[in-house]
Image 1: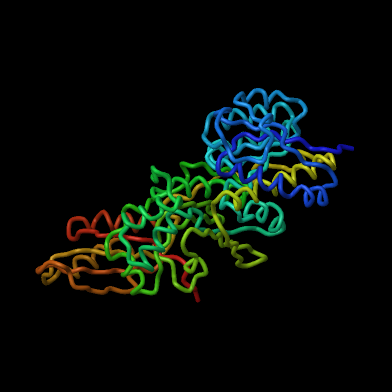
Image 2: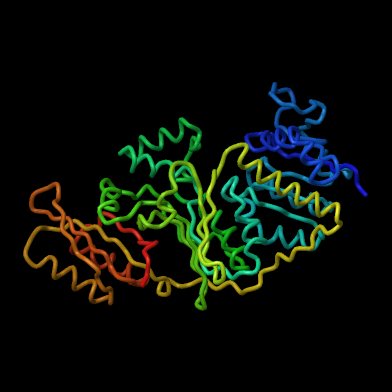
Length: 430
């Protein structure tokens, strides 16, 4: 029977320092839960001479990753250093050495998660990754354990706090995109280079992880339809509000007998939908299960201590498995074949905002284009344009395929200028 569990911590940045703080300050609670001491024995840092406010013994710091990976006395390796290649290599080597691994790395898990989980199965080790999605929200554990008896048909989430903060400021305080982004950067919600956030790649990686787990299949990053928020035009948020919608940057995935569809894009979300009220830097994931129906998890999607809480929860799970000698007993192999839906099988309602010449016959030309592609219109509205001789038209479609949507937009180019277009979600269906 072990009387102590030793941890090697790779990284002491924002998340790593939070992990160290929780582990050091919650020793009595951890001992009560596990019956053993949990200790950080080694920590990888980039500069051993740097002065840092840490409650850890300076003797645990090292700049040599191999000193940690090759230490047979360490039971669990916690990877919170970020990046791709070095982190992936560290996780692989730790698993090959028979160590349990906890990671918060969404980039690695989205790109290489299937292979790493397969390696963990082969080595009879645990690989936990709760903190890779939605910070302090226990969404991975909910899908793996809490909803294990259910069959998930779809999930939809706000999984990037930066874009949600920006859109909240644009709507609530009438900020421009540039001003809201600058505010997000000042407060630390956005990186110096915000491309991964505002272009949707960060959320897409998280949706790969969630979709693979929810549907027990392999979803790859190239399977995700990604559209960033830079295409949002002046007046779009006001237009959404006028029609009873809220603009949100949403990740969504659905599975039915035809396959899987995964997307990350700004959408018009019905004001009545619970996700519409998720504001600022908060995250939420809305899950649709055959048995449970609809349920939502909400909370902080980033930050040192919220994310570290998820990491430490994984550490506790790995510790319990070590004490029970049941590490590596989960099955991570995909149950279902990977089938990604074509554009012709992805259905939704759409919002189209057009600028046209204000002349006789233009409306009939436009409606003829929709009719040509079998796209039924729910409503057509005209709004004043800024320039004389022009008119702004808004078309809301009934359910059409994404292929119909794209074909219509392509054909509209000869008659109208497409200002913006968005998928509509969250409306109650009869």
